[in-house]
Image (cartoon, rainbow, N blue to C red):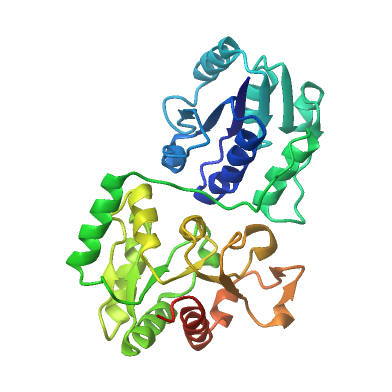
Length: 336
């Protein structure tokens, strides 16, 4: 049996939310060949996934984005003769690919234009966590989940060894370390640099080391934070691949982040998380099946899990509250 799972969203979190699907499929069909069609920007997430037999990745914004390249991709997919094609991204692009995949059974999400090609055609359940909404697709086609599920991201020993060297180089071994991610894909999901600096200093003055992560796009934020800090934190911002980032986060005692891809990487590594949520809904996008505390603005500004303030709602989450949440998780999960 050959199964293709499609999700071309280039967001780290969205692909991590799909990872429980691969495990559940393999549990139901151990002998099946399970393949994944994903965006090249985030395909590293799946490289060492034990439940995926083959990865097809395409650059949605590069040379593979043209119509002829898509027609060639569809031709290759049809040639593979999949028994089951599961589309977990309702965009026109993925709907088209799934609809003309030639799969014996095509199911999942799709735009209404391609509805007739899907059996069943489903709508994403936005009242539950995004990861659970993907698992719900499997239940709709008779594949139940047998165990509690988690986000998964694995890496090889070379990555672990590099992470160990970097950790030791900055004298972080045998210390309580709080990882901090300053970025988010929307500016109004980010915590302001002044608060990040205050939190870092509060932790360091309590004997807890702080490490800043993030990509190259976050460098300008971290530079400002470091300039405001009284005690310089360790900075790995812009220096790590996705796999290295996962291995480094794994070493942290607690991880602090707004709603972002690295927050979900921390969940995949089962690191306790203090999650800061402003305009987005933690019911759908919060840390998944990992110890965590969610901090939001005052309840007066929250409705159905989402913040009613359009701007600066993150400013209403204050450093002292985040500091106390970090200490609470450290006491509960890192008391030794």
